[in-house]
Length: 402
Ligand SMILES: *Cc1c(COP(=O)(O)O)cnc(C)c1O
Image (cartoon, rainbow, N blue to C red):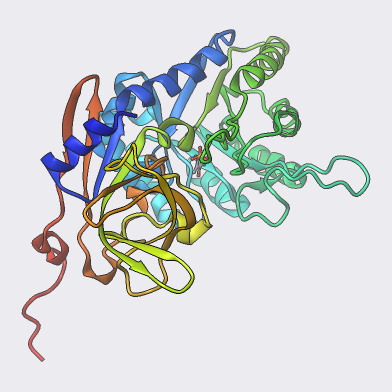
């Protein structure tokens, strides 16, 4: 991270501001490609709900990435960014059947995670290749419950319903060309992930027209200093060997797919906010910043940790602060944080702000959304201008007579 450069961005574009470093995105992408380099056909599909800025999507396209989308609107953004329909995976959950028909019209790769939809789809589009999203909820021995896509999860079709899936495929002649799992959890225990993968291989062996197996995501990145990230080299070594052996046995070329979101963009992002006030109370010192959960909700929504740094006072002594926003609700970004001494007007930098930050922003309290900047090599590009009141009012009907 280059603090001077970040401060320069605030001078140029104002605060609050999101800044993303494309070089970091590229190095994460390359790390993953490298970890699976012994697999002949590998495709990474960036899960764009993490950050849907159009220029970010185009950047992924320039690296040869595909796209993983969870709504028809995300898929439309992907098409707008120049992705071919077949390079867009559509993996919704709980959407209407009419939206799935729209995905057929657009020619997307479709992932189905519900038996009744699968049955309807098989009758309406038996020749349209589809992927089936499985929930592998594995139980490893006795009462030890190692949960990969836990049993109560709303996602995927239960592994126990495989016979019913096979019956639907037989009855309708459905063309199943992929199987999929996405556990959603932060993968630290590679062995548990590999157990889930074994279940997916077992499912795959029941379909003879597959062209890919999609292992989803859940790759962990460090949010705390010194925290671990998923050991991709180890996972790559183990899973690649297993995949190559499976493919050989299967007898047809298969593509290995992943759909990482957080791993690709989290660490590339910085959120910059200015300090409005310092407030001493009897128990703490509050630093009140010129933003709130309307711009970055993860700390309040998931209790997520984001490192906070005072980039206006890098050499100062540290003190303990509770960093709060300006929303008229409790919106604590971090309690009892050790931060270099803060003066009103300083710029605080939030780390890991590339994934699920801007994409979850709202207009709550009628606040405007911040601007976004992308660094590519040494240049900064404004990739979203700051919102205006006119933007916010664009959908409001102004002249209702009553
Ligand atoms: C959200 C999502 C991902 C990305 O998850 P990360 O933890 O951000 O990598 C991948 N696949 C599907 C189906 C998702 O819904």
